[in-house]
Image (cartoon, rainbow, N blue to C red; front, side, top):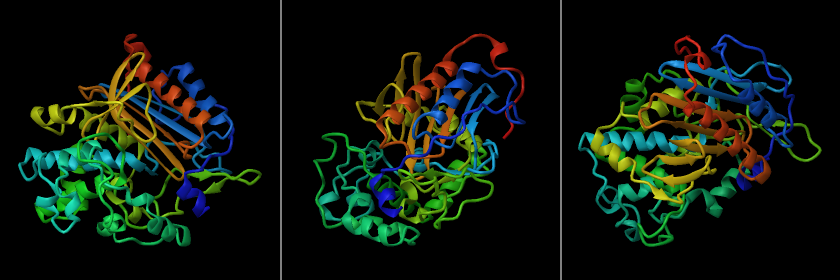
Length: 392
């Protein structure tokens, strides 16, 4: 199991795809085509045991779900269930850093040499802007042999999150800073360390002060261990000929920290992405910098349509229009969260398996995400959305 976690060779079993009936979180005015798309994703070969999508528009919301929150129970997936958001945590670290830029505690041109001089001198020219846009050239600590050996030996190993960059501290930059794009988990560790150095406060406390409280996120946390708050969406992978294996609590979040360790819910994730991609959290000047996109910079896994990389945020240009957001994947979970530029419309799609190394399934997932984006952007009048206000 640990080897599969590290290699990313994680697929989930096909699960029962019968669409559940309306539940207490549904608006009652859902689109049957969207429900079918989600059910077909769950029913696909290697499909996730469960999937939940939340659409919001001007305070109204629709919830779609297929499969189950826990194999063998039939329990439905709910917007208040906890889950690992994986690399969507990088958007949270972007929110912290850019909020500190607004407060003049950090500057986008601050360098590692100025803020974190204890890190290798070869890295000192890298700026906060480059870290947030994955153009830094920092080697990825999660791909180092030493890190992977520890996780293979003990997936629940408790790392010192603030020393994760030590795994690659002897390595030079992969390329000159700013010269090209390369997604690296090291980038957001350095971002969090810069935030701590600038304020003298822990990254966890900065998350609470600058992100959770302003946006009303009541079920979002950054744990150090492997436990998930109850109730939670169980995440799975399977091996050929074997029953699905629950990996929800198989690995420690300490080895991902600011790069992928956050736990949240579909309800909180919707609120977060609307505030971060929209105007609620950041000043207009900082938003302009945030949304200076680099074409071809894909999130991991790639989101729907054509991807472009901003600062802790990606642009997804679909056949129906553009949304801004982030994706993520980790053992047991794959995430997509996006919003319109005004923050008034949001979409999240959460599935309970890691699909990034199954090309056919990832293609289907991206098509499903685009289907939901099109529904979000389509203006067909209020009848399609109902009149029930948001409740988690």
